[in-house]
Image 1 (tube, one colour):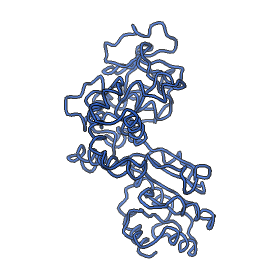
Image 2 (image 1 turned 180 degrees about the vertical axis):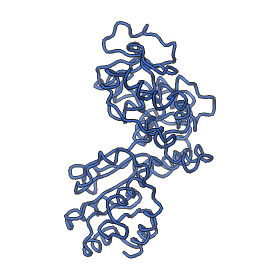
Image 3 (image 1 turned 90 degrees about the vertical axis):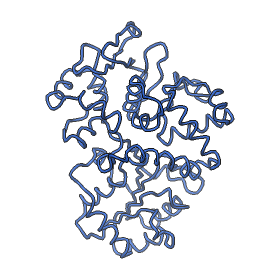
Image 4 (image 1 turned 135 degrees about the vertical axis):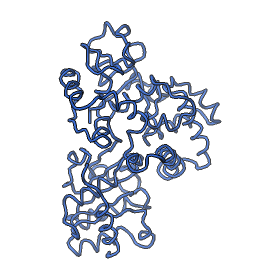
Length: 399
C-alpha cells in the first residue's frame, strides 16, 4: 500500500489544476460507484487526479488513485488493495485503466458489497462494457462519457479565452447575442481552422510535434489491443480493420456501400458491419442513419464520418476537403448531447427529430431546406448570424 500512496503523491504533485474541464462539475462524485469512459487521449486520467488534488489535502490517505496497468497489479489484486484501504479508513478508491485488469468487474462488485463505505471510481476505454457475463454493474454504476475538447474548451485551453457554454436551444434562439459576446473576446474564425487540425485532444499542449503520430498510436492501440480484448475481434484482422479505416478516411463523408467495403478489405459483409459498429463505439467513427427506428439500422448506416476532424487530418493520405471537415465537426459536437440523423434530401442533418441543418461555407443558401420548419444553415467563414444562417463555430460552444 505504501508504494501506491508514494506513486499517487508523485503524480498529484505533477498534476496541473489551473485549467479543469467543466465535466468535473457534472459528475456526481458522491455516487457509491461511478465510471468515466472515453477514448484514449481526452484527459480522463488527468481529470481523476485533478479531482483528488482539489478535494483532498496533500498526503491524505482517505483517497487512493491506482492505474491498473501498473506493475504492482501483476502480483496484487484490487480486492486486496481495497481490503487494506478499508482498514486505514479509506473513502474514495479510483481505479484507472480498469479494462486492462482481468476480471475487474467481478472484483469491483465484490468490493462494493464488502466495503460499502468506500466510493469507487472507475475509468476506462469507450469500449468498456458495464453489462457483461461476470458481473452486471450497469444497474449500480453511474456512467459518464468524456469527449475530447469542444471548440470552446480549445479556446480556453490553448488561447486562454474563457467563454460560457450554451444549450442548442439557446444558440438557435439567441445566436446574435452569443456570437457578439464571443467576438468581443476574440476573433473566432482566426482559431477555428486550427481547432479542426489540432484542437480535439488535449495532449497537443505538451507535445505538438508528435500530435498526429500520437493519434495514429491511439488508433493502432484501439485496433490491436482494445478491440480484441473488449470485443473479441480476431487479432489477425487488425490489418484489415486498418485498411477499412484508411478507406473511410479518404472517402468520408461516405454514403455506405457495404459490398464495396467488403471487397476492398477482404472481409465478409456482416463482419464489415460488425467492425463499423465497434469502431463507432471506440469513438473512431460516427455512423449516421436516416431513420433510427427503421430496420435499416440493423443493416447498415446511411453515412459514415470519422469521429472528429483531428482524426481526419491525422489519418487522411490525401488533402482533406474543408466541406468534409465541417460536417465531421458538426456531427461530433452535436452528437455529444443530441441525436443526429442523416438528412438525405432534406438538409444535411436532422437533430432530435426537430431541427434541420445544412452545413457549408459563407455562400451556403437555404435552397435545399427552404420549405422546412426549424431549419438552419451553419455557415463557415462568417462571424455573425444573419437570420437563420448561423456561424458554424457556434456549435462548438455546446459544452
